[in-house]
Length: 104
Image (cartoon, rainbow, N blue to C red; front, side):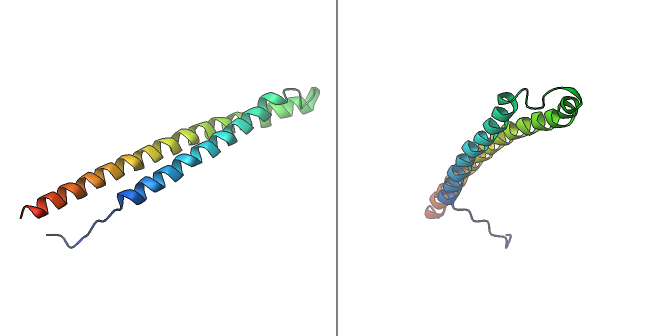
């Protein structure tokens, strides 16, 4: 038998899952903010060479920032759900171990 001990608190995992899920809203706010700036000021760069530089340098970065924050919000949501799922598995394993131990 292995000397390694694994212990996890399903309630702590659930609590962490809820805190992580709350981060999703903050990340979505950030994504909305980036998008609002992008679409809210379409002529901010004016015309001419400044506009060309703006379109070449700023627009791709802003677009990628918006895409990244959307993907981050999804990843945070998925991670929170996965952590909640792990809590269920740990809780079930604990219940099974307790039931098996009491039969001996």
